[in-house]
Length: 461
Ligand SMILES: [Zn+2]
Image 1 (cartoon, protein in one colour):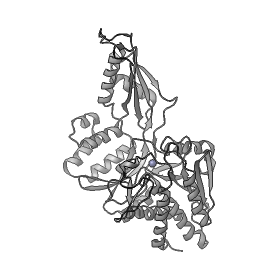
Image 2 (tube, rainbow, N blue to C red):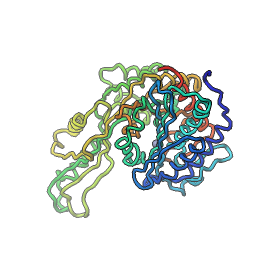
Image 3 (spheres, helix red, strand yellow):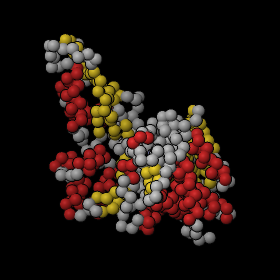
Image 4 (cartoon, rainbow, N blue to C red):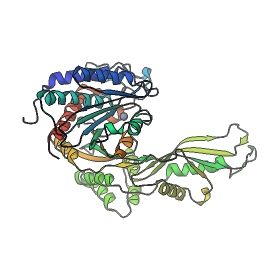
């Protein structure tokens, strides 16, 4: 048999679109999640194609679905992973109800989860059905098993989804060599040059409370060293000071791609940043678009952003304690001790007595996968064909995904759910009002995902 196999795409894409819309119509707002109905829908579709799946509930109605299409065992499996839950939506702010799956006359499909990430889950489902049809139903086995994991609870941290699966059922999927997850495959344009992100790493989290204490007193007699005043100074400082730069492997690759593909001053800037002894100074003097500046700083440094303030209760009483919640994010390779040292240095000796209380016993670790191997080779090849002139841009994601639970099991997780190079606002639409995806973008996601998986499971390592 020769590859690629001929797939009759028209009916496959029509079916996939139907499944996508049906999944968008199932309300999996998390909290509470209620992923059971969505998992059951997928199980039914799989069953109609003679594919068995298992639904594992971490709590009532919190459902995780897993299935595996067998290969010949000559190479380790590939895992397709995604989450079924979505964030909340305010229906009155939407042009079409958030759980309508409405397709307008231009072919735009509306629904919470349209870009995060029911499109990717449906593309994985469609891929599974096509592999079954193109291989197993023709008496052929691919070289790798294909495992599909549709998870609960990504949006609130995965305690009922990825983390629960990793703690309780790792044996049924952790033999995978690598995984395709959300987080990349998103088009970007910088100075007219097109890029497609591939997520190879994620920052970790180490959130904390910063607390200043003092003596309580009457508000009519000011106290310049009151806790509330000193905390305000510390918050001002943390919110406006960049911590030191640490160049990670992923960010180095990111800057290399930009150095080699940008033109003129922009190329020069990325080259300087990459090769400077003092990249922090290069950032400080750069004249960048503000969004670019923020994003670049966030991937170059540990960050500590104040997000909560708490103190006082009465207008005429100086409170004895004031505290700020700080969203701390760690780069790969950085420990909590490193982080605390940087925070203390930024705050200076005057704030040395401020307490730091970590919000969790352990930090959520940062991840970084090597940008090498058969899956990466195939992604490069397929994208050269499907998005010519577009450069793959390895990126470190500043937030977190289910990869945090799965990668420590030894599975190399890459965020790559491919969307067309000219669909530039996929990421901005996630979690926003009117979350939506054009049918053509969805079809592209399905076809490209299938092509990548088909190539990976048919070729020798
Ligand atoms: Zn997501």
